[in-house]
Image (cartoon, rainbow, N blue to C red):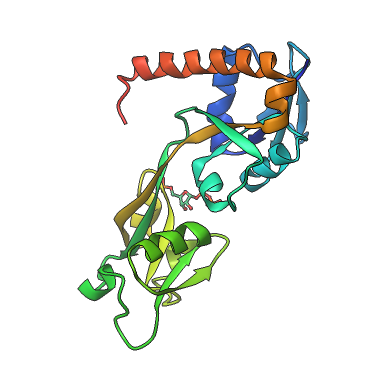
Length: 226
Ligand code: PRP
């Protein structure tokens, strides 16, 4: 039986395609130069479907896609669900969710306390992750949801702190911010629909074992460091 595989477009897609190719799954044309969103593959009748990360769990939970590849940040932010199994850490698109401050932020700010009267303000697209993090520290904060460009929020005095993804740190630096605490280490995960794990068990397990071997080969090649 063939599989429908939902892939998070962007960096995750770029890093995931070579892994899939090692497992024998290659799209019938170059996904990066095409405007198409559904790609047949050259073997096995599997299909690749390209979408935004936040939509990958939705397609997998509903069983429209049998499996999906998505960042752990997306899974952490999504509401808890019993609709999929997280089956494999692909160890690609690695980054961190961090708190970050203006370079000249005062010490009370770094302790997540308001510098003036009023609430300590956190700008982020990771609303649920941030709520959990600050609740765990016993800090009352006001979350300011943003869709992107979090890095300008402290400079423009919209927020005291941001919670965002950091990879190289270049974006923070370019906007006069510094990383403070790591909330979570992130990498891409393979998730599988619960019903598909029963009805397409052999196909999914075969793919998982090929991908696991590809991930392990890479880990050995780069020394396996984190
Ligand atoms: C992420 C994140 C930062 C940037 C960090 O944005 O929101 O802006 O990457 O990377 P760096 O530490 O290597 O500079 P992304 O490009 O994924 O876009 P989006 O979050 O705005 O969708």
